[in-house]
Image (cartoon, rainbow over all chains, first blue to last red; front, side, top):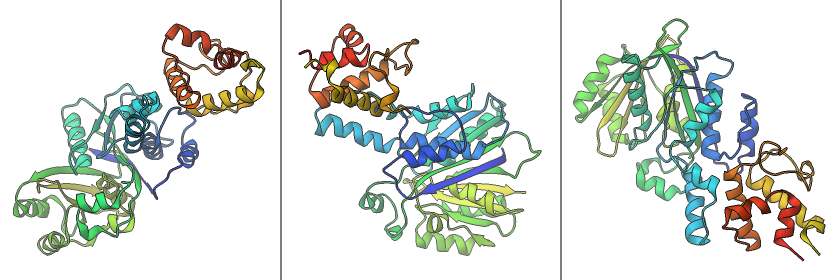
Amino acid sequence: MYVHAVSSFACAPVDDIEGLKADLKNYTDFFFRRVNKFILLSLLGVHRCIHKRKFDRSIAVFLATENGNLGDTENVLHQMYRQNSFPKPFNFINTMSNTASFYVAQSLKSLGRSITVSSKNVSFERSLELAMVDFEMGHIREALVGGVDEAVISREYFVKKYDPSYHDVRLVEGSSWLYLTAEKTGAIGEITDIQTFTAREEAIQWARTAGCAGPVIAFGILMGPEEKEIWRRECPSDAELDYIGTIGFFDTAASIAVSTFFESYKHACLIHVNRNIQGQYVVLAGKSY
Amino acid sequence: MKGSSDKTLKKELKELIIEECDLDITADDINDDDALFGSDSPIGLDSVDALQISIAVQNKFGVVITDSKVLRRVMKSINTFADYLRPE
């Protein structure tokens, strides 16, 4: 899978979506109605990535998200249980998991497949795996793969779900995308492989051989301080991409690690290590040209 | 006073429709007798918009419209809508 363009959008939590709408108008003339924050984030990330590029109408869309339409789900629950009212149709429709990828596909006039992927802490990696299989099987020639999540509202929830050592991390809205094709010509890099391991030793062994000597290494949110120390020791790297520390965190932030790598490093290898809640290691390898 | 004679009510209705249906226009862009739905309508609302408006009207004015035929008749224009909400 060759990377031809990337986008990495992250911003402080927003209540008013008008700013996102205005920003989106810089990238597309398409008029979006009945959209919520999650959909706007998805569209903004995609159109920043694909802006002024020619792409095939059969382009596939893989949208990874941990929480989906978080804000509208909250609205619907509030309308039903606090206001004892019917949920408003737009809010209700927008809680459906595939709504955002539908809007993305519609705005691109894509006739290809579109899917929303969610998979306990490694949603972005799983969506890339699906795309990889489709590329290898020849089902698709072009794809947009991205991670989109609204900032989690509760820091208490965040600390409970993730590593408490990240208690001071900035929680952001995020939408980060890769435009992938089967063609190497004109690419800025490639996603070389993604593997899942139960044992750390196996994961480290694989990472040592998957990347070039002295890769850029990046760690996902569930890699605690001790775990990172072991990896730094056992899998030496030339640089560490601390995207959570510098950009902030949203639940599919692994996507912004990958796009930031392609934006910032030339002629380098990336090893991104993440864990899911079962403790498995999901290691992604990439290479920039 | 009938609803269709009440400018304030009609402006309120227009603003409600614009907000609920996420339209990129102002209240002045909707004429009182303009068709709200269908291909002849300048703003071209659809059935999902109708449902959204009916829930909003229920919450704001306490008026429940459950019959779809009544809904279509009531939401024909701003004037018919206003008259339904305030017949006298």
